Length: 85
Image (cartoon, rainbow, N blue to C red):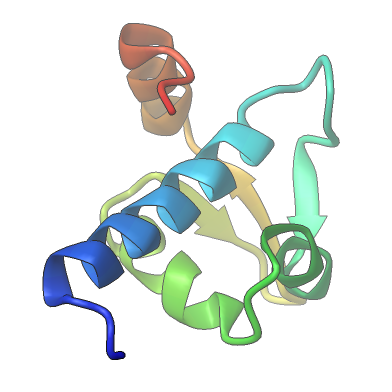
């Protein structure tokens, strides 16, 4: 059976949240990640598709050599809403 669009959207939102949580928790994770490492951590092959909207929203910065890190806006957003599952 094929997943419903709302269920797919919830899974996508969860991957984006997990990416931000990994990038904004310096007590548990490194503050800067390679795209390949992030893909392994969130277990998704096309991690660029997850990162792109977050980067476009100003929540992630990406270096020219492919590393990503959270912006101040991402830290503030997570601070305001917490790590909600």
